[in-house]
Image 1 (cartoon, rainbow, N blue to C red):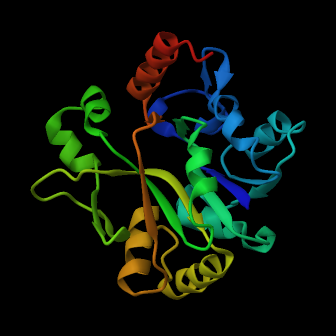
Image 2: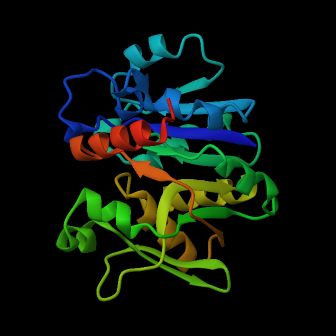
Image 3: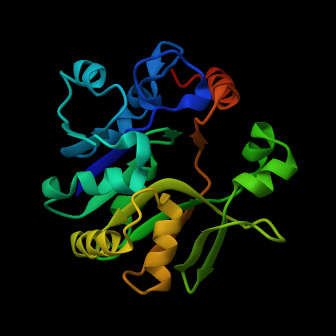
Length: 244
């Protein structure tokens, strides 16, 4: 299985005057890439898709065993486009991972022990306490996404929450069979929307029955680094748990 890390965006909401994307922002002298490296190291074949600060990122990664792919249109596209920039280098099933998340490396066991013949999405249980640290309840309804599961398959994702908060949230980690990835690539071309966000793209692919996706749920720790407050929360967690 190949690992594909999507890390082409600038991360402007962090308000850092850095010339690298969020994956290389430092947390206690360690980058987010460094913090997740224990997870990344389980994969012999790794791809990272970069855009903003491409040349600086290449220097940072010069000693890493990782294939670097560039999304030259990162400033006007989204993660979906970044994913398909790597199309020519996909030779087998892939695990797609957002570059701006930090999570428990032991999630790899969930993936290894799961059915390898299926597409798999990891969803976070008990997600609300973290969100309440990040924002008020009004903004939670705006920021979180509706997720519906039917018979252990993803039925809907990415829509705005209208009434009750869902039991799960997407973690930015998903596995595609190679055959499914190729179907999604063709579907993406037909959509003619280079700025579609990832969960909306997944939702359309499910609704139109392009692929189906099985669900894995977890209580293991996970953080999204979207702004300075998220970074502060992550630093406190690392201090409290003595992870570094």
